[in-house]
Image (cartoon, one colour):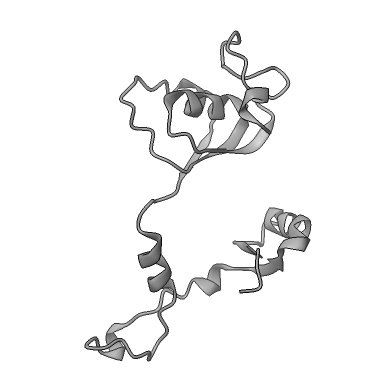
Amino acid sequence: LHVSEAMDEKSFSGASSAHAAKYDAVVEVTGSPAGLKLAAALCRPMGTVVLKSTCAAGEEFNAAPFVIDELRVVGSRCGPIDRALELLSLKAGGDYGEVSAEMVKPLGVEKYVTKVFPLKEAGEAIKCAAEKSTMKVQIVCSDR
């Protein structure tokens, strides 16, 4: 969905009637107050707005759509990706120079992944992710 299709500046919510309150989850990536307002308007009641950027424009924030529609807001912490990948690659008993092996505690995120799918099975991955027993699914996009 392109944002221009979803917008209707004449509507109260800012969303076109064809797309207003139609989506279970909306990812907001603009970091703008207008983007956040549109994301809330596109999300169905009790849906999820995922914030992938910080909205720091200093404008007034209207919490009413989030409260009235009981929207869940999920943030994604930003930071240095190279350091995050380094931490994810730690293995117990590895050689980490001056740091003793006992001090290195791997994050062990594998235990949170219910199932891994290749990209060509993305549809099955989404079905799996919708099951109550699923914590996380991983979709592998390359052979690396």
